[in-house]
Image (cartoon, rainbow, N blue to C red; front, top):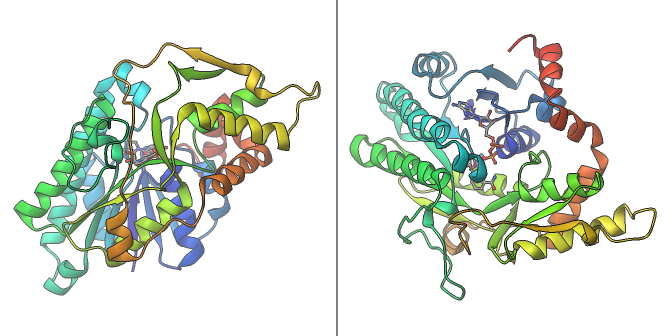
Length: 354
Ligand code: NAD
């Protein structure tokens, strides 16, 4: 048996591949376009491991995906690939439509063609798992109940609109064609290998470099946070036991205002890497103009996946954020390579020109 993962060189995808191969010998075909967010250095520990086959290419390349499916006959396709950064989507929405909408469409069509030609028993066992976000549900008022799977889609950014569109395509490919799909909508992840354009790694990296810690507006935007390995375990659980056609919300039960996150990261750095002059990293906090249309609150009700599939996160926010800060302190080379873009040289040294 084999699984095919798209976007497995990104933050969550690479954590998933590492986690999968730490727990199982089932090989992974990893299809990734290596955009700025794809980093094969995340998977350096798998070098020479025959269970991991990396393929440089796009999920939007239908011929390539068809060839991979015919050659490897995976029992499941897990779609992590995306453009994922809200700020980038505000400045350049086109790439988000191209990748998240059209790329997902091409992938679905390649998978549908492959699946339709399988013998009936293999068709029944096959799964297409689509990894998505809670941002498709829009913004919640303070005190309003957390998002359930029944919450209407109300995306507010080009990123969330493009992810919402891909979720709808996945749903339609099930209802129209019978493709056995599963969808997960997860809250904000954090943990190792997170590209430092996102809030938590940006805070750590900037603080260590003595740079300002930017906080949008009043910093009172509330997000739910989940340690990335808990997201990986949820995806494994949904793949193993989820009901075909169903959607599962995944969250950490950790609603926090962004400003609290900034204070927590600063306090951990003050403890783990105190500044020579004894001052706190909090002095670097700088409020900047808020993002246009910035959603005020996301909150996930993960009751369904807990009740039906017995999944629950294992990390608290306190334990997960401590592990995360420790990981960044222990991996200055990874951070330096990501910041300088020199991981691309590393890729060509280790894998040849990609
Ligand atoms: P990421 O930006 O770190 O990684 C995305 C990966 O997809 C990169 O390796 C990139 O090279 C690859 N990619 C982009 N276009 C591709 C294409 N056409 N074909 C193949 N590969 C392509 O993103 P992430 O944070 O790891 O998110 C993974 C998925 O999880 C996304 O679908 C995202 O919407 C979703 N998600 C993310 C979060 C979060 O907090 N990061 C939360 C919930 C859901």
